[in-house]
Image 1 (cartoon, one colour):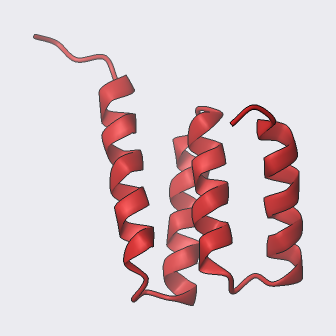
Image 2 (cartoon, rainbow, N blue to C red):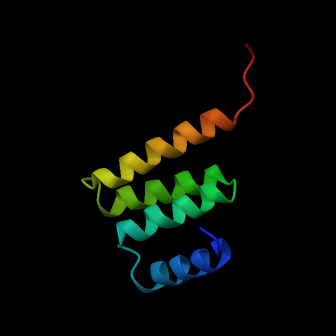
Length: 77
């Protein structure tokens, strides 16, 4: 993703127009992860679940986000 800020603006505009689109919530969550803001990303996943808890894509991407957030934390060996 090269224009993260532009993507974020477009996804936010999409959410304003039709907040029930779960894929938009999933995509904006990816943008927040890319920007290093896992709190906002996981808030977006939760919002997606409110709109369609049966969409497996939400859980797949949320799992990826959790893995990425875990890997970026400092660990003691």
